[in-house]
Image (cartoon, rainbow, N blue to C red; front, side, top):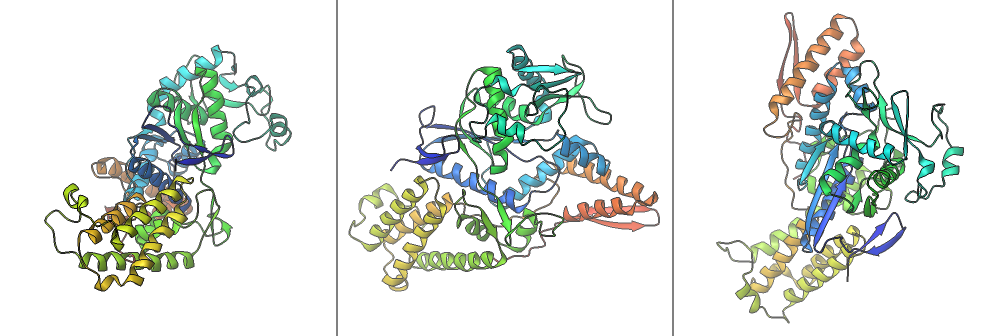
Length: 495
């Protein structure tokens, strides 16, 4: 069975055929790095981790990149709120995100790029759009004229007239249409700026991803990824920009994981149900969290509950128990449980373990080839487990057939990322970047000290909370504030 994926553009499952034989290029929209990743982010990026793992397992060479939006309205507002440099803030939260994902066992991307490092290339993209007649300049701002692109709305299945009629925010009277969006924003006081043909300013959010994708993937690529909230307007605008600038489609396939609810409610800090990824990792084994997420198809809205996690914990223990019992039946080997080609040639095709392993591989592949149906893939693992218990695995022989079955089991659980092990989180950055982290910590501590002296205790408390969540211990003394970096994960969890 060929791999079929649901393409948001066509709203149908399509056979996956890469643009270049056996080579898959993926661009995943990353975070706007102004805060810690939350559990909705975790679900999204762990799904993309499984996609990359499965494509690799099927024999494709996968080149996947992810961006970090470190220059946009939210970054600037948060940096101004905390009184720290916006670029340092972005590096800090990007490092925190990658530390979280490493703790989840996510395979690193081939490249993670920061928007602020590619401003000249973004200016060139905007110039192309304007020169090709799709953009216009007003008082140093540059807008994309949506009406010039006839396929606008094709991805989100929105009609342009409906978008204009549904506009609820105050429309900039300088725009030719309410649906037009910013390619370049003129400089404002207190914001970082770059020189451009239209005056000092900074790029719009959408043009950042279009430019970096073109720069690193060399044109139309295979899969555009992100979450469902990226679908419109972000991905819609990227498609329009790429066509206007370069005359090519953005991507061949578009995939969008659905939202995550918390106990049936949309996650929100104001509701008190906002959970960061690292808070979840502090209490649960990463494999248990993965198993919980894998239990719902990525295109289905998921409800995050404590009961659901507890059920995943129970399921994980059953999987571990099976593997332990199977391993105990196999004599120790100097090269582990890898079956050599010579040993594989001698396997009995009628042995129960040979048959179970073949059934597992077939069921697993059928599930994953059906638009990455992870619930069915997990069910295939449990089908083998159930049959193994029925056959009496505790008393079965420990020959090559069982060893080959266990090897298959481990490979497939690895495809799902279920072999992840707990790693500690520093909250400051990945190894080798502590210097950058300490610079930001020093800046945050100094800003907090200023707030305390000015009687702005709300800001001081906010900064203390941020530092505490990052594993930074503060001690206020008569001569100032002392601090040291600790480990916030505290070793809690269910192993």
